Image (cartoon, rainbow, N blue to C red; front, side):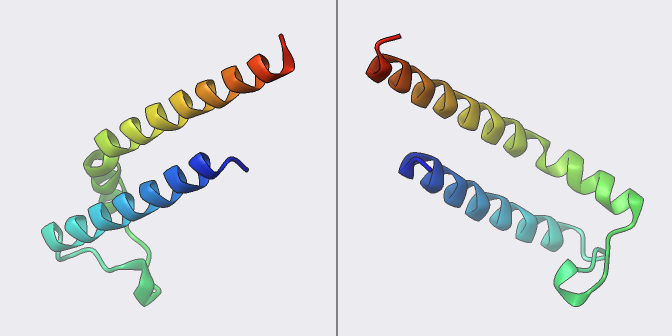
Length: 79
């Protein structure tokens, strides 16, 4: 796997983890999954809405990097 992709995945994981911590602080009724509890459907919907902007940015960044890596491979292959 390309090292840039590995680093991007790591950064995304850290960012999403930090956002989830903020979400838990803002929603004290939500139990962290670490405690073995799962979110209710309503809580999961709240998390989905809370994280939607970051998730969209992450998807765009992964897509842009994939395009860049693909273009580099095509250039190396002479296509």
